[in-house]
Length: 254
Image (tube, rainbow, N blue to C red; front, top):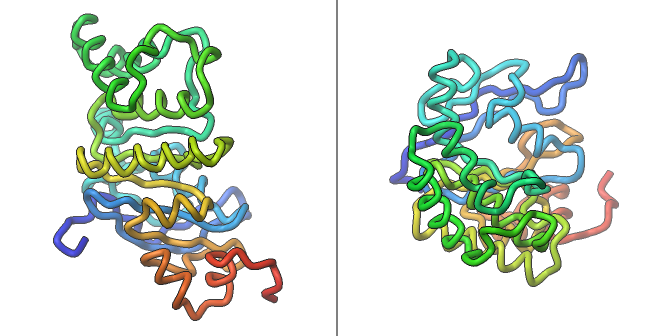
């Protein structure tokens, strides 16, 4: 990644809810085209960090730059411009149950562009095909599997051709085979479209398969306790908490 420029910069960032500090003064960069994973144990602030990065929460201090723009200092017009660079696939899929697969994927085009209905449908069908769901356009979310719902969510997240895709626990609730297939989809999209992926997860097999680089949060210190290649961290970290996590050891570290 040394020849790439940062597309996300997190600078002196603190997340807090009232007096409860969740993440305390962290900084890191994410580079163009990178598959970057935020990991850590339950309650460490992984999803909280992602929600700040996509503009849902405002930092207690510090700032987050998306492609050079401070997402939390932007006016309404600039915020809309920033959000068009971002796609988000939530853990549950967050599909509208009364809308078909095609209608769910078309929705951002109808909300944020002036495309005709015919062209919006054509674009949506292309994205659906890209995630391997051609032929499912007329189905409702209740008629498709959990893995298919997540693929629809990916297609919808990509429909505006964002520079960055955020994933919240993509493998949650999936059987091992479906989870591997979703990992393969992320790899293929990354390699073919040069999209930056930011993935929040604690699934070790997915981490080893898709990550270029990870950061690990720890709720005990509320900071980043590791950064780098996950296999290198597993084998060579001198932090006992980090080795415990990557080697799936029981919680015996005091």
